[in-house]
Length: 337
Ligand code: ATP
Ligand code: LTN
Image (cartoon, rainbow, N blue to C red; front, side, top):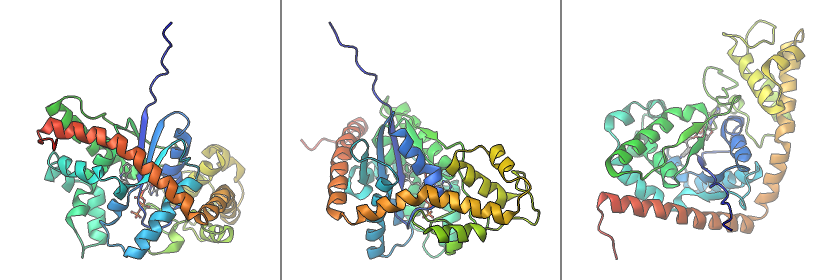
C-alpha cells in the first residue's frame, strides 16, 4: 500500500544585519517570530553581512559583530539542528542572483525606497551604489530559497513588496521560477519606537544608547533606560493617539508579558508613570535574562559556533544552487559544462 506523504513544509527566510548588538526592536519585531515559526516551517535564517557594508564598517568590528549576531540568534532560541542558520557571504549565490535581479529592477523603483532616502540623508558622505541596490540583494536572499513567508518588522514591508514585484516580473517572462513571498509581521512589536524619540523607530545604530534597549543590556541598565524614556506630561497609562511614548512602552510590555493592551492599561490604572516604567523595565529584563545567559555560554564555545555556521552554509548552498542554476538556464547563460 502506498504511504501517504507528509505535506511539504512551507519555507521561511529572514535576515538580520550585523551592525551592532540586536535591540529589543529586532527581537520583538523579527527574531521572536523566527523562533516560533521553527515548529511548523522549514526555516532559513541568515546574518546579512553583505548588506551591512552599505554603511561603512570598521573591519574588525564587522567580523566581531557577525559572530556575535550569529551567537545571539542561537541564544534567542534558533536551533541550528532544525533551521538552516548561516552567514550571507559564505554562500556566493546571493551576490550572483543579486546581479541578475538588478537587471530586472527599475531605477525608479529603487529611487522610491524610503530606507534608501533615510539612510542616504543620514550618511550623505557615502551614498554608494550598494545602498541603492540593497533591496535587490534582499530580494535575491529571499527568492534563492523559494521562501513562502518572510518574518520581518513593518519597516521592511516596502522592501518585501519590491521582492514580490521582482519575482512576479521574472516569472511573467520565464515561467514559474520563483515562489512569490508574503510578509509575516508580529501582532504587537512590529515597530518598536526609540525610547528617546518615540516618533522614530528603535535602531541598533542610534548614536544615543538611551534610545534603544540592547538584548544584552544588564537588568539595571534596562530599567534605567525605561525610566528615562520620553513620555508625555499627563499621568494616565492609556494607549491613545498623541501618547507615542506611553503607547510604545505599552506595546513593549504587552509583547514581553503576553498580556493584551487593555489588560496592561487596567493593571496600571491609577498608578504613576514611574511605577509603570519600572514595571516595563523589569518585565523586559526578566524576559531577556535567559538569552543573555545563553549568549555568554555560546561565546565561550567558538568551535561549536563555527561548526554550526559551516554546516548551515553547506545546507543553504545546496538550496540556493538549485534556484541559481534554474535562473541561469532560463535567461540563456551558456552552461560551463
Ligand atoms: P540598523 O540600525 O543597522 O539599520 P536595524 O536595527 O534596523 O539596523 P536590521 O538588522 O536592519 O536592524 O533589522 C533586522 C530585523 O529587525 C528586520 O526584520 C527589521 O524589520 C526588524 N526591526 C528593526 N528595527 C525594528 C523595530 N524598531 N521594531 C520592530 N522591528 C524592527
Ligand atoms: N533588510 C533587512 C535585512 C535583510 C532581510 C533579508 C530581511 C536582508 N535580507 C531577507 C528579510 C529577508 C533589514 O532588516 N534591514
